[in-house]
Image (tube, rainbow, N blue to C red; front, side, top):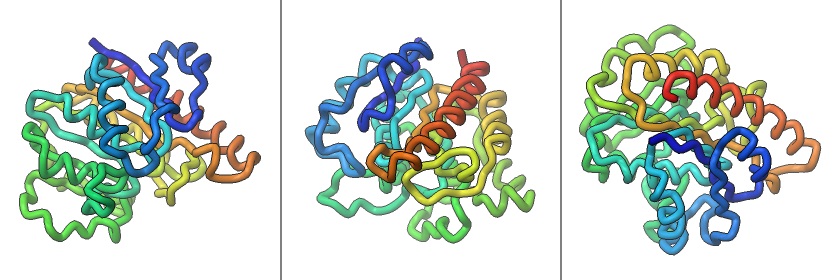
Length: 250
């Protein structure tokens, strides 16, 4: 069963707009201890609220500060799978704050600790950010930089991707150029067209368990005019991605 969700942490999604798009509104604005770092108490509550929906469907996760929620969906997957991460950052940092789950280390947690993960595919960071030196199981990690995509040098790495297991896809809109979306993190330069083309490789060739999308512009991140501009672009990007992905998996 597929459930399309919008998890509202910052107030960025209105319940009316969410339900108009036939998404299920999951209110998380009352949960403290969630911004960038997720407390143990907050983790327990979030997992409770999403447990009944499972990992299948399209999930909007608010800003990139809450990208760690991908980990909570992935933990519900009980079969061999690959995680495909479109992101300008690799989110493979070591935990730094009291061993809390956070938006910069969640992918590393999945890589080392998920018993069913067969491969992590990271697509879109700058080449300089892909210096992950302590990863020894190289066949389990495929990293493709924006430079490799732009120079058409990604073909060899794309062939390393396993196609015999289903995939869960996670998209942070900070992988996109600022002409396509505006986030509260530094951004890459991928176009929506390139993102759709890359998504097609997985949507067509693989069984897709679910997809999540984050990278909203937090209402507190800038002034009102910046927020209005960001919200307009992000809504357009969200709608484009939602309709495109849904045409393949639902």
